[in-house]
Length: 158
Length: 152
Image (cartoon, rainbow over all chains, first blue to last red):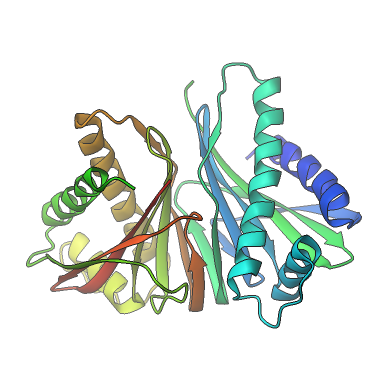
């Protein structure tokens, strides 16, 4: 898969981590994933359709998710399975993918991508699997811990 | 969430499952999802965009997933939950969503679906869309499973 699909998502993540969460992204490395993806424990999933069909993952550890939620709400949490932590993660994913999609649509007139609402999954040994989609990841190092973003795209015929 | 949008999904699921040879499939319940915790370790999520916006999640136990995959392949034994049953369950979800979407079109709602993503793991907590989720329970010879529908 061409790695250029993920670039707008990386750009959106870096700017939103900085502006909204006050977290500098120190480095990012690309990683090719096969059809399975192993989570760090907390994953936000957002699908998109239009000229490209696919989905976006924002994946992080539980500690990072709690840090993000605390920054957004000003409260502290003891477990990442709390509703507000899940909601904060979903909102962060929504903002990042919203920005990225706007960027992609502006640069590709007629592509007309649209997002599905975010869903959040947490658990032990989470593995994601896609049929017929290969994906690409970028691992971002932040002060709150590593955050991985992953984009899988199946290009349509539009 | 309008209840008229729920029947196309129930019919879609029953159509597809019957076509694939899953006999004795019955709907056992319909309720609002009250907790985030899910005891099912296999979840397949498909997003909906267009006339309806939301997510549909098919969730079940690993054993049920293996049994369903086995039935889909004409009774071939599926001892382990590896790539093959994963792929089969994704395909099932895709067919169910596709069928449901064409049922929705008949009542005048144009919906586009995203490719399926299967999520498996233990002690899962999930939040599907950010809205009230409806859970429809089914039971068949392969075991029981849920269809979660979250529409905005």
